[in-house]
Amino acid sequence: MTDADRAAAPLICGAFDLAAAADCSRRPYINEPASGLAKSLLCSWWRVASGEWRWQWCGHYGVRWPRAFAALHQREPAMIVRRQTVPARGCCLAWTLCFLLSAASESVAPPDSLRLVWLTNATLTCNDGTPAGYYIRRGANSHHWVVYLEGGGYCWDAKSCGSRWRRRPGLMSSARWPRARRAPALLSMDQTANPLWHNSNHVLLPYCSSDMWAGTRVKTTNDTFAFTGRLIVEAVLNELLNFGLKGRLLLVGSSAGGTGVMLHADAARRSMRTHGIRVAAIADSGWFLDRHTRARRSSSVDAIARMGHTLWQGQPPSSCVKKYKEKPWLCYFGYRLYPHIRTPLFVFQYLFDSAQLTAEGVRAPRTRAQWDAVHETGTALRASLKGVRATFAPACIAHGALARPEWLAINVSGVSLPRAIGCWERRFASVNRGERGRCAPRRLIERCSWPQCNGSCPRLRDPRTGEEVALASLLQSFGLDVNGAAAAMGLDARALSRMSRAELLPLLAPHT
Image (tube, rainbow, N blue to C red):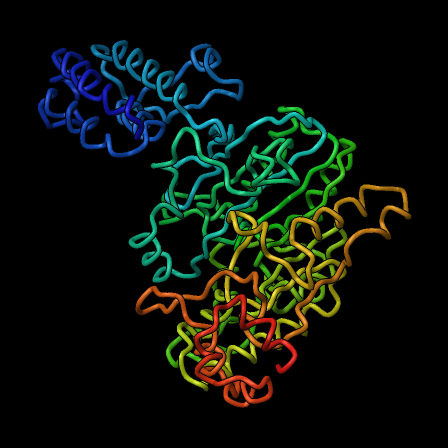
């Protein structure tokens, strides 16, 4: 909250006290005295960003915004708050206050933010039945659009969904979505933070369906949750045509969003082809494997995918389902789905993906046996990328890159991730073969086979203390003979263990 917001708080709370002085005793759904209600609705929520609480208050009173009012202060289609019974007295004042608060909070929104638009199809909702939507900002380049699918895991049965709702309700509901959201790294307008797409049109799809963007299950009175991720993506792309979508569309996603990108790439390409729009896709850390789990009480990855597919009423691409008719849920795994994708696809994947390790039951590797399991996962991921035409795979223990500021620094063999993606985009966008040949290689997979051997990897921290793990200790824990390596380099083992990461990696590389 800004200093201006803090200064305005007493004035706005006073305004709500005045509003509460009206005769509101006839509200059948409110038992709290009006004055106390006004204070509790506003002042107790003031800790939330202004762009968020103002819609909660208006929604509580059931205010429905006329499109004419909304059009005064936003370019996108008006935001519609769900309709409820509203008493005649106080409704006009509530409208006025909500409108003024909306305009005031928009005036202090960060410049690098995207604005919320609700889907016009009200049947497409988050898990809990709250409306689905997306964030958008127009850019200088009207012919290039970047649509980003957020990730955030998934749930697959009543127990896992109930636990998700208790622990992470923000991933299943839009009730607390702010009116404006700061852009993640790949949707930034700042050329320094986003050298590739800072001028593009940016669209962010918040993840609230818990179904890897694959579900088609609309909420009914008998359902606890809805799972409409697939339908949400289709609806957003159709609505973007009304915003002037043209030229090239880049569909990007991280984690579950990365899987969603692979599931939607061909369908998006087919639907946009009739409008003359070219589609390409980037899957960031969505390349999961159906390997066995090491946890004793955990369901297998295959069984979880099967249960999720049934619960969500998932619809993977039909081209993949034809091959796995008896087990269509196998199409949620990247290496099985990839051969059926015809859309240009760039795959970013850490070779020691932490989400994959967690799914296999390797949560906090500290022993030699646990590090052996990490190494096996890395070997399997490396092998699964063998047939991928465009891929970037550093040997790191991490998950997700493109939404984080550090994506600019990640490199493989001296080639940065932004450069690799930029070259890939130019290849399929250019007709000049000479220009294609001067770019970075299509396939950049780390040569070394041990975790964190890449100096650009995100720092690994001890889950118990939060402190960064010393590289020499890390290497020793998964079996590297540090004493032998020190002797081979003519160094004392204790001196080697005290070296910084930047000093140690170049020395160890020839000996591993």
